[in-house]
Amino acid sequence: MAAAPRRLRTPLEVTLAVWRALFLREAVARVSKERLAWLWLLLEPIGHIAILVVIRVVIRQRVIAGADAVLFYVLGVLAFFMPRNMILRSFDAVAQSSQLYAHRQIKPVDAVLVRAAIEGLVSALLFAIMLGGLALLGTDVAPDDPMRVLAALGALWLAGLGLGLINSVIGELLPDVGRMLRVLLTPLYILSGVMYPTVIVPHPLRDWLLYNPLLHAVEALRAAWMRGYRVPAEISLSYTMAFAIVAVFLGLALQVRFRTRLIAQ
Image (cartoon, rainbow, N blue to C red; front, side, top):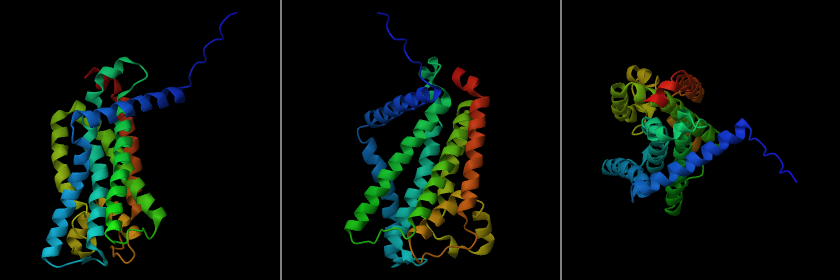
């Protein structure tokens, strides 16, 4: 009796299989590369938060713009670290998966998308751990507007994805420009409202800061999470979302346009 013909997989099934395999590969590599890799993921934001909190304790300020100072810093640091880490890990995403491009099902864009998914998952775990610890210490960590919180986090993730897609191409084709962009992430940390509320910034400087789409999402997240937190009227989550969508489409366009060169690098 003749064997039944093997069913061909659909393009969607092939794509999902590629993403699943890359996800497992990246996750295993992330853990096995350094013994304390996962511990460092937790210690880095804790270190940033601890330094900022100690500064506030020294000057005896426990409330920032109507919000609890510790929760203010936790939300700011974790919110910024998500897109920052996505951008950082996108620079070498294409090169580190170069051996896999011999399989025609795998494209450079797949490596970037999978790394973005992993960073999103890691950020969710960090939020759960940090906020759970604060709750055990007696801090009220219940979000005031959960849906708007999810919208702000989604906007941050999409912004990180878009910038990651763009930077993965730039970092591979223009290494010197890529190194310069890495350096710019440090001032971006300062300009994204992680350490201070935007409402206290005087107007001439605030007007320039508001061009930063990450600042809008960080402040919108705090305002949605903490009742009474004061933000400028100009803060708009729609601005961040519009920037993120444009960045994602631009990044995908660059991936398609330079796919052959990325594979050949």
